Length: 318
Image (cartoon, rainbow, N blue to C red; front, side, top):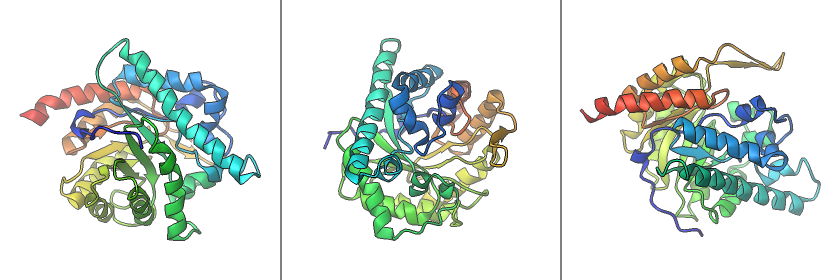
């Protein structure tokens, strides 16, 4: 297992923005079952360029392009289970290596410390049918643990500083992740939920109950909310902090504010990075430790968050 420094989350104020939708903006095809992970094979240099742009925008932590990677997902591309597992392992390792390369390039411009989080989506992401937005899976709890454990066994031997379990829809899956983490005590992770209203995660459990359950784990570095409408974030920060009583940092990285229309397969609405930055100031005041963006956010949004972070420091220290 790769040695790791303990995570000082107080040093992380700005997260990065969306990866898949930013790759799509740059001409990459993410229409297949592996979503942005296809680009690991097609154009790794484009992924590195996205990482570098987020670092230049002010991100303290970049997330790897591995959200959709799993042996389960690769089995849609090959009938050979062993080959699917090998391809998934190669993709996970490659995603960390690309982030490391981007970090090294950025260090030539700016020596500040940068963290790498290995992005891991929920089981529903591997199904690529939208199940991560409701969490009603036809899978036993032990099998859910095994799904997450398979990826952890690989990432434990990389230089990712921490793990980012993202868009988790239910308390049940969060508890499966905690179980999967137990054999790897050196690994720390944030666990971030997707929420359908101002108080509940997508599956229906109160966010405060989810936060309370995670707060007891020494391997949980932070509790988050992502892939959620910006208008819901302030009350969700309050709900999360109520649940864990500030025992863990709260992080948020919502969508741009646009919504996906499955009928037309288009995004609707307007992504205003200036407004996103103004909301970030509100989220910092509400108690968020770190802020970034999810779907449809880009470097301009993260630059606005970085400005909000700098503006929030005097208020936080006074």
